[in-house]
Length: 377
Image (cartoon, rainbow, N blue to C red; front, side, top):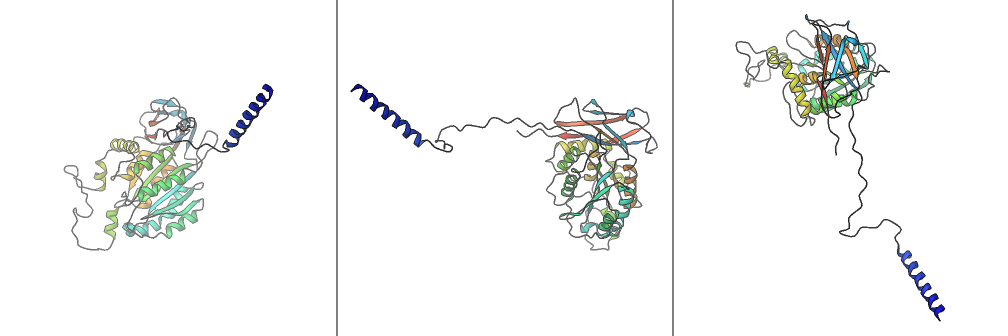
């Protein structure tokens, strides 16, 4: 009897276990309300690290003449005050990757005949025999008119066929496209010559309709080692060349400016630029990169050049577009290119770059720095 009872209890236990197993789910269990969900293990934060910083260095003597007799040992580069080891040094020899950014709004229509003739100047004096270039036009839209090519004929043909359309001028959006295009070109390293990344803008300094902020463009240009040059198209000159449209009075007379000049001096593009010294432009360029959400409306082309180590040349009176391009081409092919991998400094925040030479009486122009944003949490 005892034996039968034991067997019955055993059978009952096995049946209960089998029933429980039959009810076990085959997939994930849906949590009940109020039940905490198991979280995935925390991910390691990604720390932004800049692996290579390239800066152009233009050196001039007391007379303003370019100096092309220096060697790598003559230069010292610091990043946030920390001396860096130059890993790549070149004088005008690294081939160029260029984006020619040209305004095609109707506001520059009177200057179109000049723009149509600039193709050969751009190819011969800027591209050179080993350069490659792309062309981007902008008005109310941003249009890639020519992808990167080494063909001088292809670039010249694009400029010959340029037309002006709407009055919009999405300058900052176009600059962002140019930086993005250049960021994919190979950079110089210790083992490879690579290519120097340069954007040359032919435009007014006015932006109309862009979604992109200038500070954001400059920040990315610095991180991508893009140097920006600009030829400022004079809307005043364009208006003087254009046939009269109406007699509506202006707030200020044509060819003058709305800001008061220095006492006792007539207002001209030269005195207008003089209101902003190079030191003020440098400080404003640093501020623009650090405060990308803020809107900047004045001196955009000068700021872009200052922030990246390039140069801005305004065209007015006898300073033609062709002459300005020729000056930029001469500088690019007589310019020092320095590269280093940052060491001994912080990973994020603003990095101040200083380039000096160990010889008296020489003035160096280089990019002021770059900004690395903290990683998103």
